[in-house]
Image 1 (tube, rainbow, N blue to C red):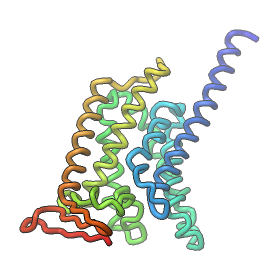
Image 2 (spheres, rainbow, N blue to C red; image 1 turned 90 degrees about the vertical axis):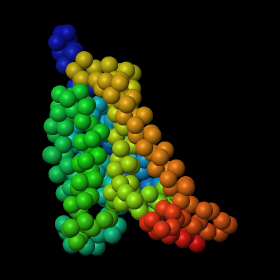
Image 3 (cartoon, rainbow, N blue to C red; image 1 turned 180 degrees about the horizontal axis):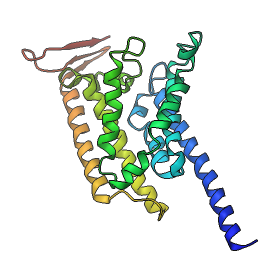
Image 4 (cartoon, one colour; image 1 turned 180 degrees about the vertical axis):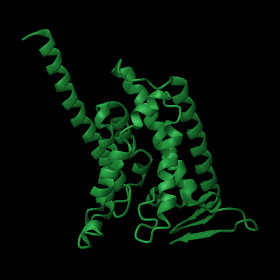
Length: 254
């Protein structure tokens, strides 16, 4: 076997290995996001659920198939979350997960190239803006509404949802996606250090560090604000989002 054929075989094998691993991570993301919602209620997963899929999309999958990872974790989440609801519905609702998965795959084909050209400078902002803006648009579509908003995974956690009275439901959505994208950016950086790839542009350490610190501070402030508005007693949680006389939003969960 010539050295040229050997290199071609190694490259082909690596292509398929990276594709399989990337798709597995994307499927894991879909499962984690789905499990964070009712009836499973594994709500902490919503804070990290997108990380495996984003790592697969932006670092592990071959570039020309990177969009497929996004299609799998978004489409997979829709299938896991809405699949049982529309199982007996009209055909396009039954296969909504597949339709959206294909659209996401096609739309995100050039995402990796853009992020590498800009050295991942817009990775966090673009990702968060894209996800939350789609949620904003969905509220005007009757059949979509607010189903599957990432913040809904926290409906049983009054100490986390109190600041919503100030920042709105989209404020919490932004925070959740900021955490996911900041962690994903850090994961991409760590993976590059573990397995350098000369064909890929790495994330700058300073950039990833700034995002992690900034998002960490924002999360701590949010949690502190939520805790400050909660007064806990045996058998119930009484939460006031802001002092009486200002917003005065009261939630009582028995």
